[in-house]
Amino acid sequence: LSCCFVVQNTMKLIFLLTLFSPLAVSSFLSTASFIPRPNHIAATTTTNSALEMSTTENSVDVSRFMAGPRPEGTDQYVMQQTMVRVKDPMKSLEFYCDVLGFKLVMYREFPQWGFNVYFVAPVESVTIPEGADAQWDYCMKLPGCIELTWNYGSEKEEGLVYNTGNADSTGTSDGEKVKGGFGHLGITVPDVYEACERFKKAGCTFTKTPNSGGMKGLAFVKDPDGYLIEILPQGPMITKPLDCDGIAAEGGEGYKDNSK
Image 1 (cartoon, helix red, strand yellow):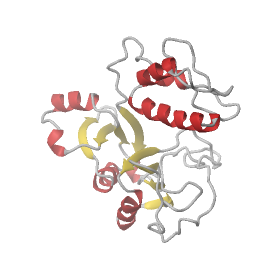
Image 2: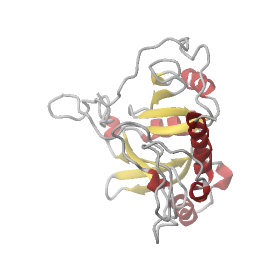
Image 3: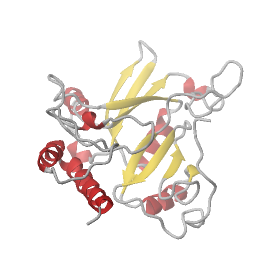
Image 4: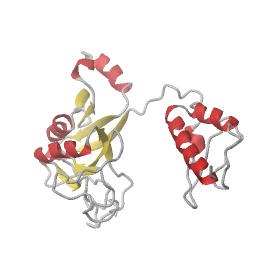
């Protein structure tokens, strides 16, 4: 067998092992002395040894962040929420709950400070407990919530209120577009093409349908405030002949950087 064949198939095996257990990668590498390693692929000799996965020139080796246990004291930390400000809470809740299929799991009202917060997440209603305290406990341990923050009176303003971070002039003093740091929220679905047919029927605004642009098989829609929502598959990145806008898989423009 050629060196190239062995390396390529070994890389595939290591990638699959990484998905399930970084420790499995460490164990495999410690015993795989037969593997011919090019200069850019080398196993480290630390306790949490892992293969340098990137082969891109001038890239960085991030493999150690995939290996080993979480730092002491952080094992119960949860990535619980991302907060976005919204102009009209009812329109936002209709989008996230009726279109994307999320549920309102908890909300709090703060009239003394002039705002409310609404936490939505992709869960079933039967899992949401009754009572404010129980809902708080449930929500604070639930990964992947979106906190929709409504500042009283914003719903009365004309046009869009909040800057989305993507080459957006909303809220700037000089009217010029800014290159913000925020990019998008994202959900995964069993079938991107079927989901986009549903979103189109619901009247969603697309900035990218599955077959448009350089990256095929994913899409972007806007929420009522203009924030981008990326639609990705839960399995392989596949393409279909036509998407919801009738664009052929071989069609569409090239890659577009939404930040510019």
